[in-house]
Length: 125
Image (tube, rainbow, N blue to C red; front, side):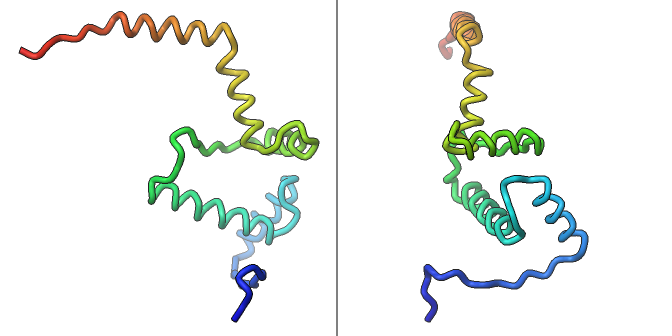
């Protein structure tokens, strides 16, 4: 019987257009250096996304974001240089800086307080 930790080879048939799409993506991306790396990542992402949606295991604060190649390459470079530990960490940091700077947080708090004070509870009759 095969060792479960040993890699196994599979065969996948793709038409010329799909192969061209894959090769162009690999060329434009610094994240993958060959078709196998891309296929493994794509299959894992697909299965995890399906399991997350179908079994309710997706985190409430987890989102899928499609980024322009230049942005993704920049983030990948920052991760490779050790500025961030992961793409996820880099994006979370960017979102914090964009949405949670002091002035914006104060505005959000003020708006929330105004909404709370504007809501009146009317008892059932």
